[in-house]
Amino acid sequence: MVEARNIGKRYGGRWVLREVGLTVAPGRIVALIGPNGAGKSTLLAIIGRIVGRDAGDVLIDGRPLERYSSGELALRLTYLRQAMDVRTRLSVRDLVSFGRFPHNRGRLTKRDREIVDQALEELELTSLAEAYVDELSGGQRQRAFVAMILAQDTPYLLLDEPLSNLDMRYQVHILKILRKRCREEGKGIVISLHDVNLASIYADEIVALKDGRVVASGAPCDVVSPAVLRDVFDIDVIVEPIAGQRICIYAQW
Image (cartoon, rainbow, N blue to C red; front, top):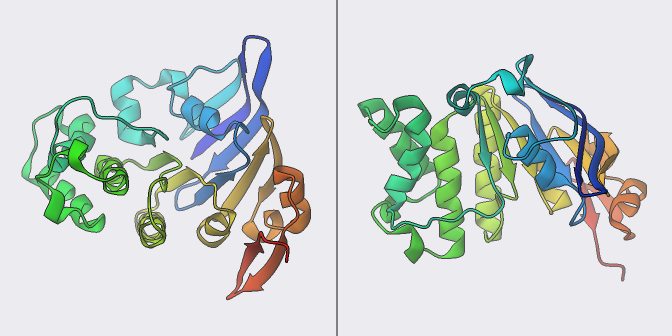
């Protein structure tokens, strides 16, 4: 279980997170929603130990984050940043193979190669495996980074806007893969999303942030409501039950 308790973060004299908490259990997807600047990326970076915090605690399976070595943490938790970049010329296969580094320290085994091939196949990148990452489209590159994260095969995944640059088909495709990994392998996932409807459909729990604070949290049926979304996004929406899901209609005709 990943637990973030009363997290606080400030830059200069400005608090960007205040008393923020969340819990993600194995086999569960927690979606972070909120406007730009709400603190979603900062929270994920703190849990992933990329950014320090000024208050609160983070525990991974009951153990304080600080007590993990870098190698130990890389076997328990993986973090996909919102903006990933590759500064060296790498093939897609090489990039995805980096996900196995915590397991093999750079010496790929037969099992490592099988896992890499599986990730490439899942993200429909097999035909592009030998292409260079810098030659890909934005959406293809994003899928390659997601494949790398899946190849790392950790119990917990932190994904910051993993659907950026993706068309509708691949947004749904990746969310289905993540949900399958949750259900079949017991992975715990925290994912930040701008699309409230995707959060409503695929998440087990939604945490809504605004101005660095948690405005609402709970099951999608509780968070995806006109009142909560008006409070979070300052916009009036219609919420309708469609195929058993609560779906937002943003346009006011």
